[in-house]
Length: 244
Figure 1 (cartoon, rainbow, N blue to C red):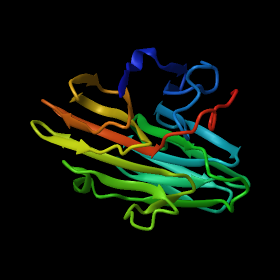
Figure 2 (cartoon, rainbow, N blue to C red; figure 1 turned 120 degrees about the horizontal axis):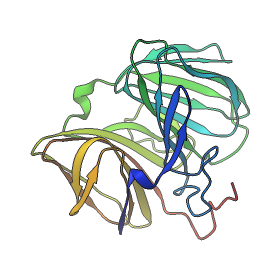
Figure 3 (cartoon, rainbow, N blue to C red; figure 1 turned 135 degrees about the vertical axis):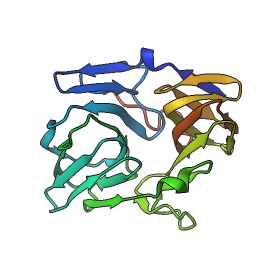
């Protein structure tokens, strides 16, 4: 089963310096029927004006990945980490028992990045951080393993998260196609970051998303398609339902 979500139906957060698309309920956007997808709690597609950003603020018991689409993302946190990431690079922060951090655009151009929150498999872990400068060519017409569960010893993904999730990115060139398998009792959430694509005869535009449940897919494009996929276990009934 697959279901396309048009980006025009998603939540919006528009401020003087921030223009955000919310895939799931977040901040002022609340939809009781759209809280999360399995353990995937937040996917925000953020546009941040130059010289602006999120000042230091706390997080707790959440696995957070930031994937830079364009521009430069500068991170700082209470663990003493500082870094600046560019297109195609990613950072990971396990908030665990509690951490403070900031995210800014100190560059000259608009910053676009995906802010991703994943529910961990437990509370109170020791906070952790890492950033990874993936080579762009490692995702061209193939799946780049970005993140995987700490329990998945076979994965080559450098980011290890405390949840049963595998994260992949790919940049598919014109006329190419790329298959993705979703096994029994598994599901996936795909975001078309840039470009256009046809997935199992479902046409998608940039910033659209796709819910995939126990169905293999094939991504094809007549232009190009920059995609990210979150593959995870199907939740048991009521397992991950929340009220907020």
